[in-house]
Amino acid sequence: MKTALITGITGQDGSYLAEFLLGKGYEVHGIVRRASMFNRSRIEHLRADPEIYGKRLFLHYADLQDATPLRRILQKSAPDEIYHLAGQSHVGLSFDIPESTVHEVATATLSILEICRDLPKLPRFYHASSSEVFGSPDDSPQTERTPYRPENPYGCSKAFATQMVRVYRKAHGLFAVSGIAYNHESSRRGENFVTKKIVRSAAEIAKGGSQPLVLGNLDSERDWGFAPEYVEAMWLMLQHEVPQDLVLATGSPCSVRSFTKDAFAAAGIQVAFEGEGESEIGRNELTGETIVRVSPEFFRKIDTTRLVGDPQAALNAIGWRARTIGGDVARKMLLAEM
Ligand code: NAP
Ligand code: GDP
Image (tube, rainbow, N blue to C red; front, side, top):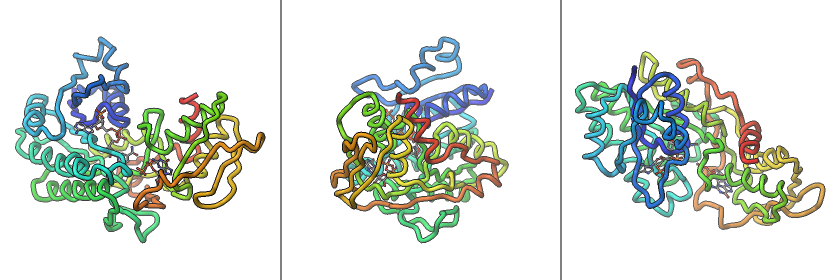
């Protein structure tokens, strides 16, 4: 039986990855942090299963800032594979809390790499990097060779961590890789991400709610995929014979406006957009009621307005391709929300 350690096991990706690895017969160790409210909702079903919890799934307390407990946990669990997913993951928020974002996303990754270097058995190491390392790139779609030009504290921190992973791979011979992942969503997505906000509102309005959905930049485009498919790519990257950083993307851009239309349509409501910029609104085609508004509150200081990745290298190297794309993600999320 192989042993894996997941940082960020209580997050969207960590919870799907834990299910995936347990399904493959792994012993799974997860790092959780203390919060004033018990914070395990995404993995509660695994914790509640007596055949799994305490037998093949083990949770350990540590914060990313705690290098000593992290070292102890890594020494004790002696994982074959580490999936490093923990950290502040919201781009917009990283403008408000840049210092903790840098500590969690950049410096903590370096600390874990340092710990790995000293372990008697070198684990394979996956780092959850992000398309935000590219900022507003000249190339479209972006590939593994596109230069890093991040435009927010989160992207800068991911760029640092991604470069460090490469340094540890080359300098210290670690099997360490970064998945440069584009946005991937699911019913477990955090509530302040735009997709979750949209499907939640569409479901509420379909059930008779009257609060309009208030959004920022509707023209912004993202390469939205489905999170459970992305955790398989993480695992495949660690099974590959050579360590290699890969872009994980669908290859299809989708605007916030288009995602909104698809989510509402899946809830049985057709939205017609009219106006421009901050005066743009979305009306219910049938009733004429305003159900989507734009507010400056949700615009970012700097926004990467179009990100789309080239999935070809991942397909060639590990045989992975995203199957659920753009509007299909909106439909799946809406169904789950309803
Ligand atoms: P998420 O849902 O926000 O989960 C983040 C996880 O990190 C949670 O388990 C959280 O614990 C934990 N965490 C945060 N700060 C911590 C700290 N100081 N100490 C210990 N644990 C801490 O994020 P996700 O969507 O699953 O994404 C996983 C990783 O992939 C993140 O690094 C993210 O930046 C990266 N990524 C995600 C996407 C995407 O579209 N989802 C795309 C590219 C890259 P709590 O549950 O206690 O908060
Ligand atoms: P990100 O790509 O990791 O920043 O994921 P988000 O879901 O937070 O944002 C995706 C895009 O949607 C960004 O370009 C945002 O500017 C845009 N957006 C438009 N309206 C909103 C909103 O109300 N909330 C959020 N979070 N993003 C919005």
